[in-house]
Amino acid sequence: MNNTTDYFNIDALLTPEHLLIRQSVRDFVDAEIKPVIDQCAHEHKDIPNLMQKLGAIGALGPYIPEEYGGAGLDQMAYGLIMQELERGDSAVRSAASVQSSLVMYPIYTYGSEEQKCKFLPSLASGSFVGSFGLTEPNHGSNPGGMETRLTKNGDHYHLNGAKMWITNSPICDLAVVWARDEEGKIRGVIVERGMAGFSTPETKNKWSLRASQTGELVFENVVIREENILPHVNSLRGPLSCLNSARYGISWGVIGAAIDCYETALTYALERTQFGKPIASFQLQQKKLAEFITEITKAQLLCWRLGTLKNEDKATPEQISMAKRNNVKMAIDIARESRQILGAMGIVGDYPMMRHAANLESVITYEGTHDVHLLITGADITGISAFV
Image 1: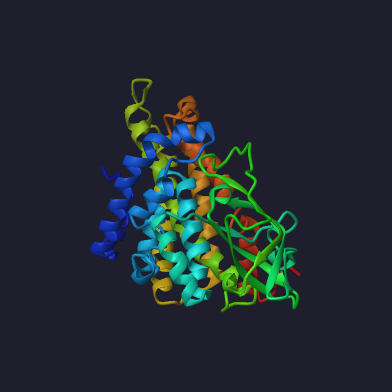
Image 2: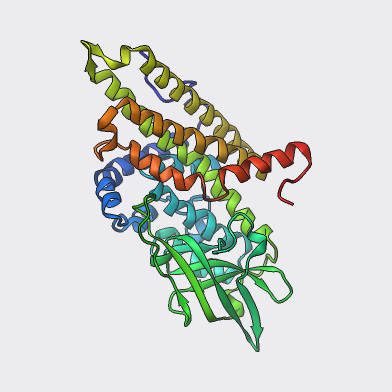
């Protein structure tokens, strides 16, 4: 009987360090996340001390060089970390993904040496929590239409506007915010907790990512000094490059959610008897399980190749879009179908399917919607943009 989730022996393509990192994060998830995640999701509260715990295992900005507090790991390791965190819950991977790809990455890539030294070590340890402000009430899939403004006023700037659907907003110590300046250029700004005019109201009543705190970033004449502006970017290339890093992590992460659902369904099907034999012996259940492991394997191979290209700095945004779209759809389909194998038991919190399925409804929308990623691929293969 072959019930491994590494059906094509992809582990043989990984280094011993990769396998050790994956196992250590898996052990962390089993010890610190799985025992509490159902209660946190039910009660709509975040996991206690999550960011500090993620920092302690090196899951925040793992590809950031050690001199700035990171672990100096490669992109394959980052993907494997995201996979194991989302095996626990999408909210956990989201917290690490935002901190790593949307906050630490732009500061490291576009920030000054002073900004790197000031913020990155605290973000890597989890003693600082970061958020990322791009999406606005009127602009989601079209970030080029952003209305948040950065205007010069003597020796400083004023920041005005609002961002919404922001992970970690209510608890963030700082936010990397994207705004349009008076010349129409997109600038990155580091907004710190305590700045006058900066508020972070929480978004309530979510049916998805319930163990994650989500909110808004609101700016009312927030005074921004030059030292808080990222000096090395002044276009949409800045936020879009951050999204590419985050989408890459999501492509790996959702495999973890799919594996959690698959393993649960397989174990249940082998143990649950009806009509005198395990339900795993029935053709329709075997069809589901065989399709699950097939789709998981395809997603693993896609991510392994993408990780190889990322390590060589050859992965294109379009390739990342394809992987994000394909793998999230794979995971949400497995979450929904695996729930059926468990019948009524699949809706209770003792099993993870409904929680993963609800979470993935957010994941299939954020960092580029399912349909937008399809159009990115369409534009790439035809040379014709469907956005304009």
